Length: 74
Image (cartoon, rainbow, N blue to C red; front, side, top):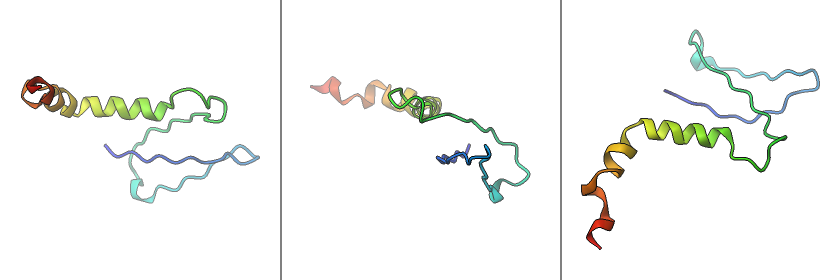
């Protein structure tokens, strides 16, 4: 999966132009988040990236492995 993150300003007519030449013909998901109205909350991007990291297996199988836990030896 490939993710592109961009912060754009909606013009006065309500449009945003995003050109994705490398993804031509590919189905994509577009998520619109108003970041100006929620400045003190955790960004959805951070939560989404944390969720993707959990799904890779690295956290579960490497960081969660007893053999990799350096604190066990202290």
